Length: 455
Image 1 (tube, helix red, strand yellow):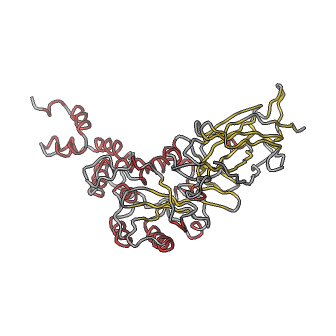
Image 2 (cartoon, one colour):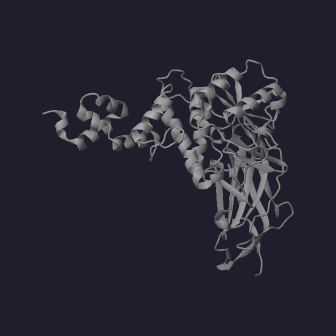
Image 3 (cartoon, helix red, strand yellow):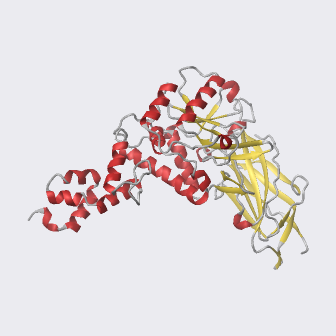
């Protein structure tokens, strides 16, 4: 009895287990197997498993006639790269795009279609570099963000996010290849890099306050500039070197540079709600202050929620300073729960900040103990439905002891704002601390005293 006698359903199950490459080979056995191996329902499974496609689309997002054609188009377009790497990069971008579609569609609209091999070769020729394979595939699937001139000089739709304090406004976008060429030439010339430098600018702030990310094409590491970038070309690595694996062998399956690791971590933080979108008035932006434990501390007293978290501020970091090397920013967010403030079983739909006390710890060492009346001398009120927007509290600086290297957990090194939960008003208070060694910065929350307002 031949294998064909087991029936079409059994053959389909077998082919599904074999995978797309073997199924294509089986089609050469006989006419019957060719029919089974060409069944589009089979290829829809392959497209879903490898490329997470629910409809037949090519690598540029264009519809095609069948799932089999879609799969073949993808394989042909990326035939020069390890397929396992293509699958991994595609999933990385899918996570980012899925999150943006739900939470930040205006940023999703700025993402470009994938670059061509000619686009990549043009960049490599102009800048005299060879892009690491993972970065090449990242740009082949999505060529960064397309921003208008107005957006580029002030937009807050950056994929990486940003922050604001005093007159310092930062929002980082992922650059398209054409802008990478322009910015790299300008920045490298301005910073005085060697003509053989393998650094390229891959992400930068779209505001007038510069924050710049560099990819070293030689070792695959991603760097962010510090306060001494313009004077001493000082930069911080964004990913531990031990995680980077540049195998220029097309059969390699574990190739990963810092660019891919960085974006994968960014996507994980989005998917896990560790970072969210903040909305202030009609302006929305990605906030990278952690929103989930253990990187975010939360306390609720009398239905007043207080949240605290901290992030590194690399562009204000000064590795040459003897003690105050790394600048960390912490954010305190105070909001009234929808039920209102409850004291001794009596509900109130508003309350007022009178006294606050929080402790900043670096591991077990207390580096700051902040307490006193109000915030910067103001007694802010939280009124359940009466405030449409929260008041903004300026930042203050304070020097404290600091870190040796960017912690892996904080290699998305941005600062932004905090989204108002369930439409309730939120009071923000932010400050900064310096640490000398690599430590876990934690903000411990003490109960805040409140005075009640009569309504």
